[in-house]
Image (cartoon, rainbow, N blue to C red; front, side, top):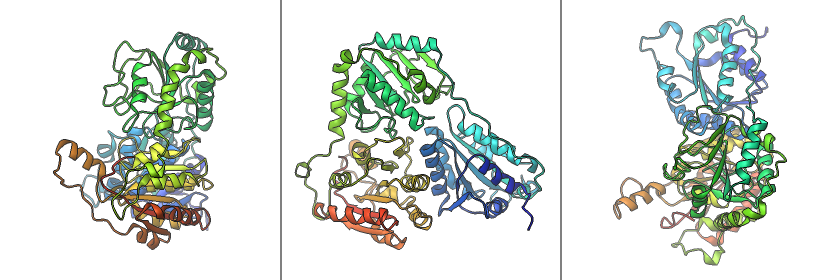
Length: 549
């Protein structure tokens, strides 16, 4: 049989040219030619159970690897279901490419089955929207989409694929990758930065955002540690410097320590690398808003999207370029800054230390404390685990206690999107099968994409899932109690047997209803994931009165 020459095959060949190892897909008749191209390809097709799960996996792959994750869905309802991940990628600056099958060209503007306008739907939440109208441009469009997703501030890109065009003969040539610049830091800019820092009494590094690599994270860690500069990190992005580093002073955003926030406000020279002072780390545009503050913003994003507060200087460079520029830079002020660093480091250590079991508040009968589960996990977890979580009060246990000593090791949404934990865990397990992945979920958050445990089992991506079941949407309940005390409305949940659900998907599952059951449950779950290579779930029945660590 002759090798196919249709546009669908050209798209697959172009994905391979861009180093794509897998795509996350929910199939549809609108892009059968692409599925045909994937037949026999070296690219793995991870078949998902919901478009939201598939798109979240692509977004998480982009966060975890720095390379665009790829999702494929069908038109109309499929595209609508994927939108939640596009919004996450847009707000978090994550590179991903969503391929969407479309109606045939001749059926446009006729209210055809599942017809929609990709530009109108996605234009405000993506960097670019392409529609492939000519088969000969299939490879070019893939190259442009990947360039747009990776360049500058990364983000999501949508490629619309009319089903008839996909079947047309491809007469073009495969387009090479378009290189992305890391920017640069000039010698003069390094000198100005060094002068500012040497003259500072309270310098601070703020790390987060996009375009990081393990080498860049290690380089910035070495620079900060060599010079005794305290480091704080963005919310749900606390893996750019090891949690055990002596200069790690915590993270900003929801659940942050007051000392960390005070350091952010009081620093006389702030160097933000990758991150900018956006809504969440500034406590709703209240911290560090003084126009006279000294803020050096190091980011490849020329638009400084989301930035608030002063801009003393904008260095147009990625963390990779910045880490190379400051490598070996000695400021000679570590001893003078020790008193400034110490309270932040002490606060971070205190916040990330689990109280002894005897010190935990008593829980109601038939419930266990999440901190007891975290303590048992920490006693057995390897240093290079990956943790994933979506949104909700339950995330605090992962944020506070799970180690982040390797980059990347923490995958969370910074737009407060629920349903992320399980898809993200699967994406990480596929990208790095040697590392243990732990998904920390709330009962409400888990059920938004918990069905993807079937994908975990089918595609050999075993993950350990912890479900905190307090029978409510806990975060909203907390807000509700603050604004309308005693008036419970619209937040209570009647939950299934989560452990039985995990077993139904082919995994290991058990329920914990008391602290004395935790040790055995953790031991058996870890054996299932690391030994039997199947997904495992621990259903922790929690006291709804204990909302946070």
